[in-house]
Length: 136
Image 1 (cartoon, helix red, strand yellow):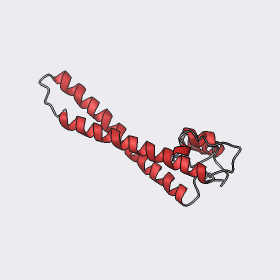
Image 2: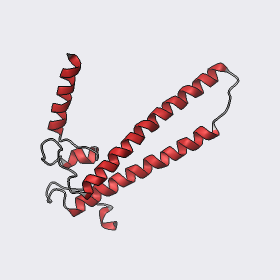
Image 3: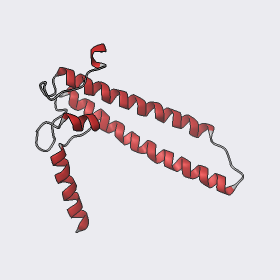
Image 4: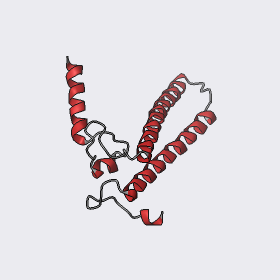
């Protein structure tokens, strides 16, 4: 584990070797733990903040803040399922490969978005198709 602390995947080594898989597994698990920690904090704050504000403007502001926070938490809940799916792909050795083409996803893309399932090129094609369908 100590070896992985300063490790960064490199294009010079075999793609998705054991060390890279462990690096991304750790990155995903740390991200998931952070999200869960933030969720607990938010839940505690919402429970503690259950205050009835006498002023209508204060109450409206508080309700708006609460709604925004809950929407953010819902997005993070969906993100956790994507993280879990990525962890499963690491287990079955499909992590890091484009679901559309089967080609390796660049390490730079995986660093930036460890839950990526498409290569940059496949993602761009996907987004262009979505735009075409939306515009029709």
